[in-house]
Length: 419
Image (cartoon, rainbow, N blue to C red; front, top):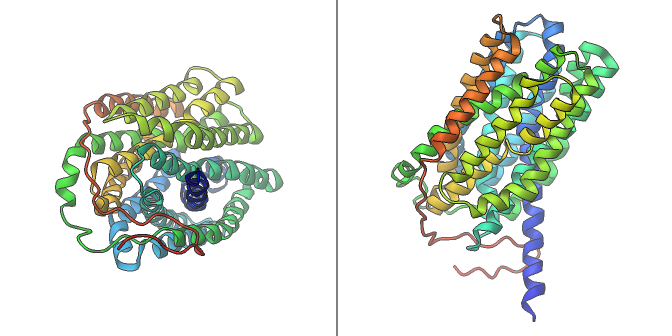
């Protein structure tokens, strides 16, 4: 049959484009967002911060994330999704480099805010681009490509899990600045593949892009509530788990091993498992399942000490936490008209950001109390349990996508899309 080579030729660019777009989450979340947990113990010791101050630093990042998510659709319409995606990565790279150049609390707070804003814009716009890589009707195929995009977060976690401990080993607690600088340089290198991949995805037609979005989003109300709770629950763990392991006596390369295993589990599970699983589940079953598995992943480090508990937590939590954004993106693609995907994903990400802003601050205040860091992390367990229950309320209502984007093709291939 002649169709097989043609199908393979089409799928190969889709695979490469999704992989190139994954450079966005590598920088935006793997470096700008999550690597802070690795640097936190050294920064607290060197800069004399309380846990509340450390949590407040992440709250500044989350506030920037809220604003970035709320404005991402506007930036996309104003300047084009492809340009905004690439510039978001570039700004994140600059924020990373600048973070290694100052120890001033106010300055670092501003940089965490800017990093949060650029991270959200990059992630939201990149999610919408990833949703358009596959223009056909195969939901499982689209979900798998979205999962490939999300796998960039795990790749970024692995890279930061190598770079940051190497810097801390070489320079001690003063190596936190070198850690930011090295990640900034890697972020600059990521701009090239991200820019190439973005050029392969056609821009969304502007007509009617903002119409009817609010009405379209109302059926997703349970998912909005779930995303707030999930964001608060998972990010409290990600912010303070390294500090918890450090307080339990684990050394730099022990926590690095934990972080690397978490990143590998995230990339592998998001790439190979969750995209396909979520593509087959309906309504709120996928978000509820994600919350339940993430909750189980938090428990080992709270119930037991030692490397065994840490690795178990890294595998279970790492293998599931990025399935949350994957589930939301897939639901948005199914339940919203195509012109509303960017706006819908952006508003859902605002809900996620609200949770991420509140969670570390409350968890940090609990960690400063008599119960210590573990008390703050039990907040994650409670929030994740409630989020799983809320997610089950979600029902799915499919929407016909009458205006699909043109399929992704290699630049040299002649266009065959009907206009």
